[in-house]
Length: 276
Ligand code: 7PM
View 1: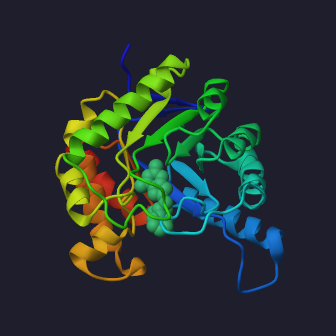
View 2: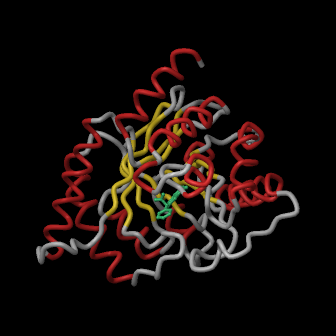
């Protein structure tokens, strides 16, 4: 039966209305020498603030997925994110998501109480499918061309929409074949991940086509460089462009938007939900 419920860990998320996923980055504190405890406390406090602002999901990341960034080691990623998940799983009123492509991080995060695996590599790493299948967490499968270190050098597609659609359809089938129920899966075109400005714009324009795959769509455009290329401004000056992108995405069928600026996005999407 087709419903609007996403089954994810301890939660069943109603996707009748658009939902806001708030981004919680866990990064080492470079300003003080507070070490891991300070970084954990900062991330937990930020997460609580995002819940107060109306976040429906919290996406916790140790920054291993940043385009162009140097990879973070497994040990370092675990050290950053697991204490935050352990702390939040005791107090969070909303589902927790882990932003990782590393199967060992997925496994530890599931044990620590996470509800969703958000994977920019769409569970293509060895054992990732099995780990998710052997749990009850939800999963977000994202499209990426290439690898984060080099993907923005010369992204090339014959037909970006068809290629993204085919990839996501194939990854959803791989999940189903491993016993991951349909109602646990979300799909994401992966804005900025091996895509030029024109590719990103084509994907927003035709996002409604991706909804035809029959899975809820998650969109992440918050503060991304395509917004700067369209409207100008550096990362922290892209709020208004990002709100426009979230509104357009939801109008074209997205069910979840992944954003840094939760309060502003919640307000904007209330207006959309009132008329949708
Ligand atoms: C620099 C550029 C730093 C971009 C970080 C990023 C997505 C994601 C990320 C997305 C899903 C960011 C990105 N983007 N997961 N993780 N979808 N599902 O904005 O678009 O945080 S990293």
